[in-house]
Image 1 (cartoon, helix red, strand yellow):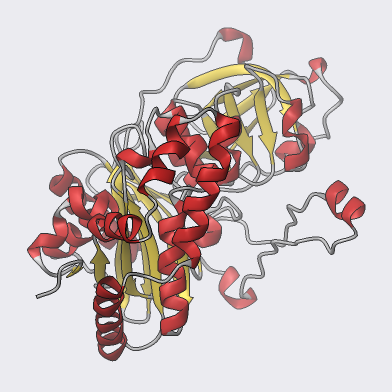
Image 2 (tube, one colour):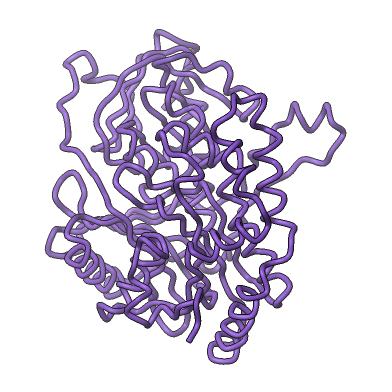
Length: 444
């Protein structure tokens, strides 16, 4: 009998206090009869055991109790040790046995995903704040990825997020979810309830990382509450670059180009047919009943069919009626984030190096809706982005904070004038602006 590793098919794997809500919900989906990749999870007790075996308890405590300048060295000590030091033999032995059995049964590559005890909880989704490794092909890669998941709990991004939520890194722990990699033809997300009482599914070709990171505009399928397909809105597949040109020029480094190169034959058709959309709607309703509330899901589809990858709590708001002043103003439609209405001054930025220009209450207008923008969420009243969709990580974080977002808005950074007054309806998915307040906009 294993001490730290549990197969997702076992009833014990649904224990969120041991394996974190992400892994526990994945196990529960399978127990409810929904198709999942299967796999196993490593409990948070293994993380705690590793902390003790490396003698990191005192450094971890100082990392969260000392003033910032004094704590930084201790944070680094914990993170580096978790990433680089050998795994305790009693943990590694179980991991290697489980990994080899998984590869022998499923074949191919695996995915290694963080599953902290605080992830996907009420008001703390941690969407995009930890680590996911796709395409692991060897034992060495597997053990390295697992250590990186442990260390991710102490990353600057995760610790800023926890500070904002008044969560201490020593009061939580990191479990890890290991599954066969779905060699996806298409993947995406879904909302079991939208502001108008319906449902929504998003989809893109291939693996879903680009969608989660807000780097593509997905197909969107709007459904009734009963699962009837009402409207299909095709996404946009194109090359784009999000590198900081200023940084690249100054450093002499080659620009880091996150370009999406979709299969041109596939791009001419939508990702899902009507039967597949209805199938996903049924899975969402089952997950909703299982969790007792609306859910946001992630899924992937290979040649064998659709697999459910995640389900987390979803919170949406009712639509608000905009002020009369906005009637007749130029408007663009995109993917709704699902939260409220906000107005403010547009701050149009081209890269992360310009984020310091954002003033409290501004509406951020940008290209990529990635989770790196979480640092500016406390300052903005709303976000408009040219890429991304309703189930991207940033949209999840926006719903968590009650920040209106409209994503997948074509040419938003070119058409909305920097400094112009903007109204963002995160429920209807519409952004309007007053063109006379900023630079002249392009002709419609």
